[in-house]
Amino acid sequence: MQISFDPKAFAFQLVNTETKKKEVVRPLDGIKVRLYTCGPTVYDVAHIGNFRTFVFEDLLCRAIRFFGMAVIQVMNLTDVDDKTIRGAIKNNVTLDEFTRPFKEAFFEDLKAMNIVAADHYPEATSYIQEMIVMIEELLKDGVAYKGSDGSIYFAIAKFNSYGKLSHLKLESLQHGASNRVEHDEYLKESASDFVLWKKYDPERDGKIFWESPFGPGRPGWHIECSCMAKALLGETLDIHAGAVDLIFPHHENEIAQSEACNKKPLAKLWVHAEHLLVDHKKMSKSLGNFYTLRDLLAKGYSGRVIRFLLLQSHYRMQLNFSFQALDGAKTSLARIDECIVRLESFTGEKVGGLTLKGYLEGILFEFAKVLSDDLNVAEALAQLFEMIRHINSLYDKAALTKEDVQATLEVLQKMDAVLGVMDFEKAEIPDEIQALVQQRATARLEKNWKRSDELRAELSQRGYVVEDTPDGARVKRNKIMRVQNKE
Ligand code: AMP
Ligand code: ZN
Image (tube, rainbow, N blue to C red; front, side, top):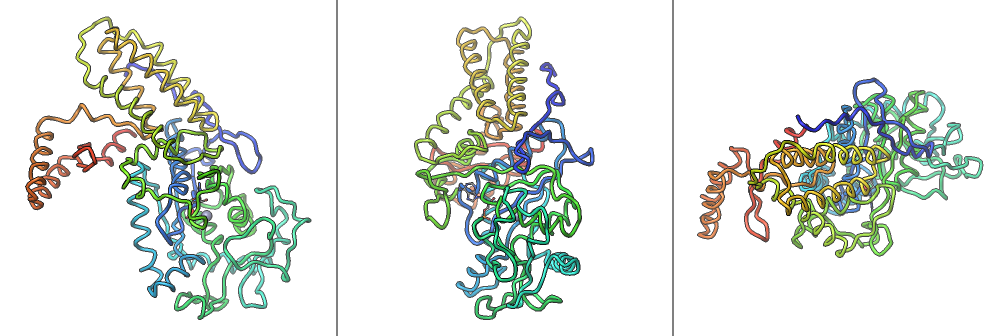
């Protein structure tokens, strides 16, 4: 390797929502950063607001690796809550039949966004037994009680540090048996005892319930994450992440349940991403102001462009979605693409060794430095574009050596291990693969779908995927192989 870069020279820091201070990311066990990320509620297809958060979490995992640490990520799927139950009843299907297609759509969308798969995607319905055990513990310890309606509630007055994450003052809250919430979602103003186990109501729940020592019912949303985090990552996490709307009540309640039960801190560091807005309002299903990934793909935008739009501003800043901004992301990405194509198809013979070594190492150092400072992607991209500008001008003056080109590509690849938006193989597809793509295009024109499928299968066997885009077929190395190669 010609470019030297030491990822361990940087202290990767993030702003902890709980302490409001920057803190260094360092695995508690000295081996792996254990990261829990709240996943989607699978009652519909996720919108790109949800994906802003999931792209941020992907960036976080990639950055942890970039700085030379290992990470184990869990992202749960909330497949039982008020909304999924309502959907299943309305459609007269089982909960599993209702949620399955949305789970599948979610995994497809993750791929389209080039999000590296988490290590585990636990489904809440597979952890009901663990939830029952935790609720029993909380009842035994006297921090939970059975309400007059037959549901089990957490008594927030019994947990001294309730409010520490969202910086609420418990004295100012109304709580106790006379004031409790049964819904999964509510506002800070109605902070009160919250439900751990919701008693079965045949009218509301149809046939959806689980047996438990406290009667038939189903878990509250918050206990789900406490249990799945404990089962898969242990009692104290290194990082717990989500979007800002989860700080209260979801994460506050997770802390209360887990810490009351385990007598240990739930997470060392809490990080929260700001929202994606539309016309300065949160993009959400309830406001109806949302776009799904599929809506945008159908309009001809690629997953890469959407990913680039979502990751380019700082995660703790709100980001306003507009088609103008999306087109801007497309233009910026095209600049990176063009530079890569130029470098990959470089035929210059100029010799003279690696004249740009110092410059490239300097840029990579700055890129890493700003990234290590609470994931400042906007500044990191400024470094990347500065490098592209400089390289293009040297290219135009025929001042690059072969070694410079190789080293620049190497730096771009290192940067992309974090960003995940670049396209490196355009100029690298071998002729015989191009010939197969051409034959497939001909077969499709002749509507010979059988032959076209055979050719796609052959390409896939050789490690290539074909995508049919509005500009014709594009061939790429298989994504999974690419990601593994990079790590
Ligand atoms: P849900 O499927 O509603 O449980 O949401 C999944 C994740 O997306 C959660 O972390 C939410 O906080 C997050 N989320 C929802 N709306 C937005 C938005 N407009 N911008 C960013 N994140 C969001
Ligand atoms: Zn959660």
